[in-house]
Length: 175
Ligand code: HEC
Image (cartoon, rainbow, N blue to C red; front, side):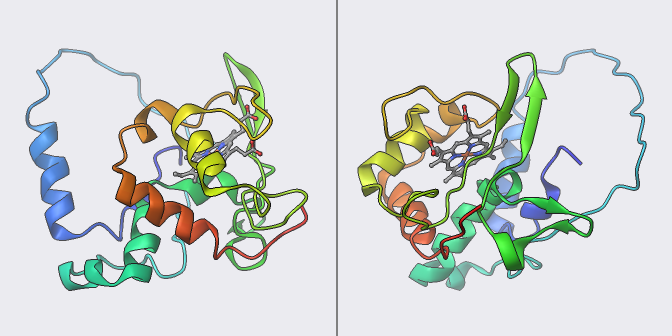
């Protein structure tokens, strides 16, 4: 369940081909990995609207492109709380509160809804972009793992604008 496959159903044929083409360039390495041990049924929680591959013409629609980018960046994989039936997209999209433990300790995904006190509703666009690409919060403090700031640092400025535009549409949640 760690691999966010539910956020990749939306991938256009071109983008999926590009991912495969990139994988073909990785130098083969012999590395036998242990079999997985699953303790619960593996479920997929596809975000509403991301069930099917997007067709190329949909990418010229601004709103659809914004949703596409946030989906493949799987922001809501970590930032939407998980209830008994999976991620609570309908009631708490982007509300945060998911705990991640690892060698870094325990981090908790934050509220990235437009709530002005608990979320990022009062942040400027530049403050939001800095958090995504540099891992620095509004008050200047360093954000920790597992969010992949260094991967997001290479997002083009147009795509970053689109991601911020999408975040501006996420209704405020007080969680
Ligand atoms: C792998 C999980 C994960 C993914 C994917 C992820 N985040 Fe995060 N994000 C976190 C965690 C955990 C924190 C808090 C880190 C901390 O407190 O040190 C965080 C922090 C943030 C913050 C800072 C909020 C604050 O109050 O300081 C913003 C903004 C944010 N994420 C937006 C996004 C966006 C936009 C995306 C997609 C482009 C995204 N995140 C993808 C886990 C994730």
